[in-house]
Length: 63
Image 1 (tube, rainbow, N blue to C red):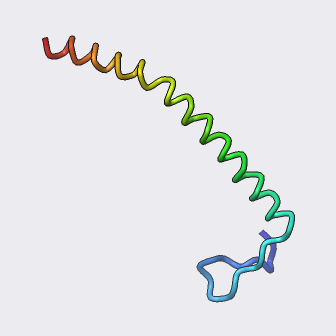
Image 2 (cartoon, helix red, strand yellow):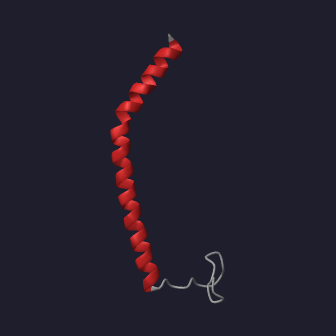
């Protein structure tokens, strides 16, 4: 952290983001969206299997 940087909890205004920092944030958000979509697809594919496993466990526990 540079001496001129300010903390959000401080009394002074925050230092504005640079163009490089903005680009990095945009890339990070884009990557996060891609990962979230992949996870949603994987969860949708695994859901029927998980439901079957849960039913089997319940059958063995409560019979």
